[in-house]
Image (tube, rainbow, N blue to C red; front, side):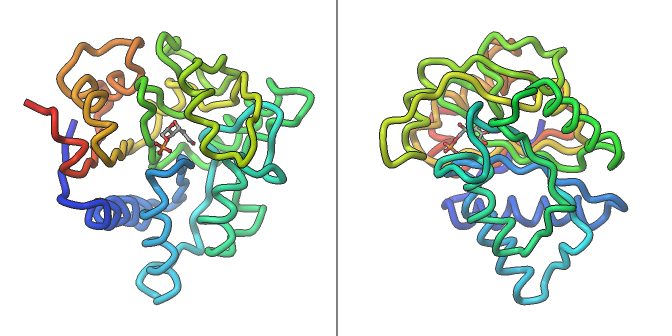
Length: 241
Ligand code: F6R
């Protein structure tokens, strides 16, 4: 595990963008799996700016979804896909042929999971997965207690995830399950980046870095990955010994 601490959210976002670009530009396939949520938006701004100013050429990159709320897809405000459309896919003008994403409205949810895993295999694996972290240690929608041997699947959301998830919606929204890459899918990525910012993430970041490696804190399992880097700002690093 590598740990990178940056003074501010802005410098953190630039450092994460540098890391993503470094790995994807040197990969012949360039498959990127980005989380949605508040944390990576600075990274996406960076990537968009770099593409628009010619600093980076993302024309070869392909994208695979990390997770989605069951019952939602890109048409829904607050869905993971909708967020990525606004923050990343839209501004980068990524065609649908370069994206594979869970459709949480699909009748056959297991088929959605199979399609995602098939897309990943077709592209010779994920090069970079960019994760945020939930206050309970979740990654994607792999909640505490998730079986680390599972690939893409339907996940039962924890009460805290349902509550915190309300921030993505303008009105109270019922959230119960998610479609997510499993921990095994994430562990198979060539490079795993976990990003966290702000004091509210400090306690869980300490557990991930200094605590036991356990499925009860899903992000701690990433310490067994050979290329795992945690990028945090000083506020999120505050409780480290
Ligand atoms: C979202 C996702 C989640 C978030 C996590 C942190 O696609 O995978 O695991 O990364 O809930 O969310 P933020 O960044 O909003 O604090």
